[in-house]
Amino acid sequence: MYIKKILLILLLAAFALPVTAQSIDPSVYSKVKSDLTISRHKSKAEFKTSLDRIVSDPVPYLKAITEDSSIRIYVKEKAIALLEYYPTEESESVLKSKIEDGNQHKSLRNLSVKSYSSAFYGKDPQKAEIFLGTFKNDKSIGKTVDSTLQEARYSAFKKKTLPSKEDFEKYRRNKTLEKK
Image (cartoon, rainbow, N blue to C red; front, side, top):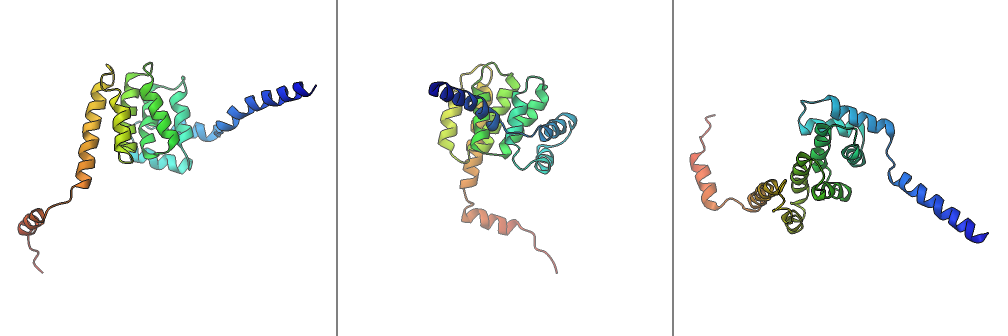
């Protein structure tokens, strides 16, 4: 009798945990999905703004959209592109899984590479280099990995390099004087 109770509790816990881990509001999910589906000509920044108006933590909803088989590719692409604005562990996990999954649509994998690099290269360049570097020889995303890493390296270099005294002097000499 005691063993049956324990088994029943474990069985209930096994079914209850996935439900609580996926705690997304269906009405909010519907709004997010609708916004990404209907609005085709918004910029990423505009999508982010409208997404932030709908929900404070959109990552679970964006993740759900990328995993929904009934949703069209262009909507999933928007969701993946928006994940770069939310650099959390969950979004990193979603992007990594899309990159690693060879069965994913090529455009989703390529966009995941770009979003991952944009969101996480600045935080830990070495980690991003190592992870993305493993896909340099991948036939479907290798070129994107190469170009994205080069772009990320250049951006990181630009941020670290300060203008020299000569640059300031050239700027000062070439600046037009304003008459008062």
